[in-house]
Amino acid sequence: MQNINTSGKKKQTTIEIMKAADFYRILNDCQIRIGEDPHKNLQEFLQLSVTHPDLIMLKAIRKTLEAMQENEEFMHAIEDDLMAD
Image (cartoon, rainbow, N blue to C red; front, side):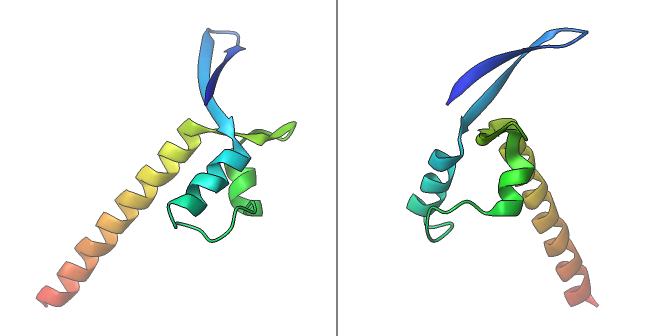
């Protein structure tokens, strides 16, 4: 993981990134995904930019996981409501 600095009109920002190959290796090691080959749609969604497809933004991973967790909690609430009826 490394930080990169960006400069915009308003302020300078630090972005945490990691190599896509490392990300897919971790998914494989944690048995979340079989194999270390990139998943095309996920790769395009998480990549730093089109010019740097080999770098993934950790903030994007964090936001995606948070959204998945919220969705799962929402689905459990719906199931609970349906079972209560």
